[in-house]
Image 1 (tube, one colour):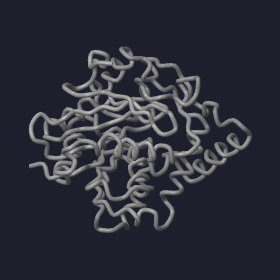
Image 2: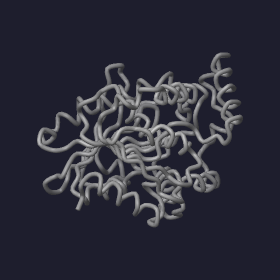
Image 3: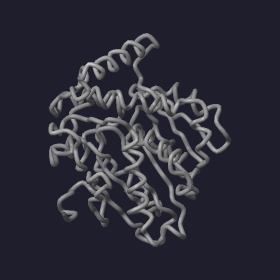
Amino acid sequence: MTWKDFPNFPRPGRVDYLTLQDGHKLRTACWPAEEDSRGIIVLVNGHREYMEKYSEFISDLLARGFSVYTLDNRGQGLSDRLLPNRLKSYSENFDCFSNDLNEFVSNIVMKDPRVQDLPLYLVGHSMGSHVCLRYLHDFPGAIDKAVIMAPMIDFNLGNALAKAVTKFVIRMVVKLGGRKNFAFGQGFEFSHERHLIKQKLLTHDDDRYAQEVDIIGTMPDLYVGGATFGWLNAAMDSMEEIQQQGYLEKITTPMLVVLAGADQVVDSQASIDLFSGADDNIRLVTVDGARHEMYRESDIYRDPLWQEIDGFLGVQ
């Protein structure tokens, strides 16, 4: 494939497919810095996402002098889907995502000859942030700093009773053999009307959100219709693991954790509880009023995010 096959990508760059040890293929991409790079960014996107959604964010990183590597997580974007119905987001466990990231870093990123002389940074959003935490825990040593945006530490399901009931139902459906079924309220075909409803959860910026509608219209195969009970069950297992005592303490990589103050997708309080008592290697900040997808929020929220990232990564 050439760059003409991906009209929403920044240019110049390179797209490729990485065949994993288990045979699955991941779509990957790389944008070298136009001049001497100030560092290499590995960008990990969120649930049901794809790298095209990050075109503006990637362009901003390139403008700051970074080289950028990214991938579509397995089961989404143009990486291999895990069920015959490509609308279904499915996973048996979350080990696969951190293992995939390790294979990507080891077999693609670390083969870049510049990596020996430049800092290597990890940047994640939502589920991507969750995968970054798992990677930093399981595969220490490669990353110099990590930016963790709106991390998926727990779902935002309202009060404790609602959380308990929802999690009980998910566990029971999986136990009864329904792990490959769409969860309640999931599994919709793409529609402009439903996308406008979803916007209220994700960003205040109408124009940036409209770009997603245009991207899906151009490349409908990027779309994922929703989570299965199996994906939700695997996510809950992994979130419980990350919240276990001592898990975070094993991560020694300096981290910037940025929370969205008006996040209705993930539970920001769970992140505060997890990170606020952590070691000095973690900086925890909140962008007040921001919705979940800060990387494509209105500038009034996006600018503070970039100020934090620039300060953390030494951009003058």
